[in-house]
Every structure is written in structure tokens, then in C-alpha cells.
Length: 418
Image (cartoon, rainbow, N blue to C red):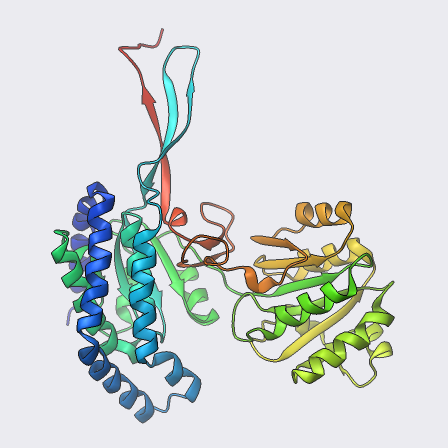
């Protein structure tokens, strides 16, 4: 296969389809989503057979149990894909909304209209259910999309692509509005991220290595985050019960997610009292603690933390712990080592909470809440395409609105500028 020619053809078709999707009505896009849900339900046998091929190939190629688990399309996961499509169909449509309309002294009215981005390229690994999640959000927000899943899920993704094509066809939308790349050749990724003529935005979903490569080589704007080095700071004015609950949940509710706490900061004024309680709670969860010198004085059985620990995303039952000199120490540490993903303070002091919200430069900043809430569904977005730690365009969980832009609209009645 001539990869460059193939990808150029895919891009051209996506660009043409994007116009049709952008001018389609909410009802038509919702119809496509619901029809895709029905197609998935009908094709359960085909999906299972395709997924079995991927699983067999994965075992032959030495994929570990965790990767095989992410790859598997169980009946429950197919149910979840179907329900996800129905939920996205029920979400409010952001496209066409006009806001901030004002009269100018000249008599014209000026406002802003929400519009699709155009063509969104999404690169992801392992989980074939991401194919449905990504396609549904892009379609609902009026965009065409090009999806490049992991090579280990090629058969599953193509089976899902057939269901998406049936859903689009039933709604009268072009099948090329959602295209799943048919080759496993990695050169396709290189082409996708360097086609600004056809692709408006790239969204990488996967490991740090993948995202670093995309960010380095792309000639198309990228919505991404590299690390989830999230902090919880327990202030001297914290309620101990709240502090214990928030810290333990932030770390142990799930270990392998980008919004899991990786560093716990504790005010020196209360460290002697609360750290033993926290250590007991984490010991019960079999979490390995790595502490600063002051932490080791209070908890002598804890391993010593290295400088590298403060900037490590473990994605595992390991937690770095540091005793800091008050709020200034906590904010200084976070702004030095944070990946600008999610950081939380536990305090009953309103003034300190406000300072933390103002001065911590992250995409989600919380007061008395677990970092695990940094999620599109929990934020009321319905679903998310990923998390962005960028400062331009989308920041934080990226839902439907994050897959759109705005343009100025002007209403006049024969007005001319003098």
C-alpha cells in the first residue's frame, strides 16, 4: 500500500464529509448515533468474532494480561458502547449556539456562534471501545473524524467501523464522516499528523511515549496532556476526616488513571498527627509510601523519596509524601512539579482555599474533593475525548464544547462604516 496516497485520500474524503456533517441538523446526527447503537446490538456476534481474532493474535505476540483486558470486548463493554451512544445522543447540541450578542454604538449587533472544528484525527491504543466514544463525540459536535486505533485491535475496530458506517448511512450522512484507518503501518500516523490541509486537530490518547511523539512531530494543533502528576495538599486548617477520605480516595479508587494522586503534601503544623493515620490507611490498601526527610522522621519505616519521585506518574500503588511549610510551600511545590492536570486542597479556611484556586496553575483545581473527579462525566459533560493541559482552546476534560470553536457573527440592517 502507498501509505501517503492512502492517507491523502482519507483526508480528502474527511474534509468533504465535514461540510455535510457541519450543516446537518441535530436530529440527523442523533439519528446516526442511535442507528449505530442498533447496528452494534445486531452485530454482537461479528464483534465478538473479530475481537477473538485480536485476542488470539495478542496472546501470540506476548501481550500482557493488562493489555489483553483492555483489548477484550466483553458483552458488558458492548452494552456500555451502546449506552454511551444513546447518552451522547441525549446531550444538548452546542453547534449553532449564539452567545454574547451586544449592540455596538454603530447599531450593529455582534455575537459569537459555536461551530465545529472540522476534521479531528484521533490516535489511540488498545481499547476498541474508544472507537465508538471518539466517533460519537466528534459526530455529535458536527465534526468528521479519522480514527487510528492500535494495531492490536485492528479487527475489532474494523468491525465497529462497519456499524458506524451503517448508522451514518441510515441517517443520510456520508460514510466518510467517520473513517477508521485500515492499515497497521505506523507510517499512517506520521501522515495523519502532518496533513494540515485535511486535518484541523489531532487528539492522542495513549501512553506518554505516543503523546510525546505526536506533540513533537505534528504539524496540526494537538489537544493533549503528557502526565497526570496530581497532588492533594492537606492544610493545617483541614478537617482530619475529610483529609483522610479525600487523600485515600484520590490515590486508591483507581491506580492507573491520569487523575490519580501521585504526591501527597501535608502542612508541617499537622504532619505529626495526621501522617500516622494516613500511613495506616495506605498500608491497608498496600500502597508503598516514599517520603521526604521530615516524613521519615514521623514514619521511619517509609522509603526515602528521591528527587525523581516528585515528578513521577506512577500509575501504581506508590505514593510520594512531602511535608511542606504551609500554603506557600504547597503552591510552590505544585507549580514546580505538577503536570498542570489536577490538584486539590483540603482545608476549612476559605481564604486559603481561594488562594489555592487562584495560584495553582492546573487545568482542574479542587477544594475538599478527590482528584478522581477530574472527568468529563463527573463534570456534567456527558463524556470526554480526553484531558487537555494546554492553555489555548480546550483545557481540562474535553467534551462536546471542547471539540468546537467560535466565530464572530454580525447582524446589521444596511449598516455601513463611516
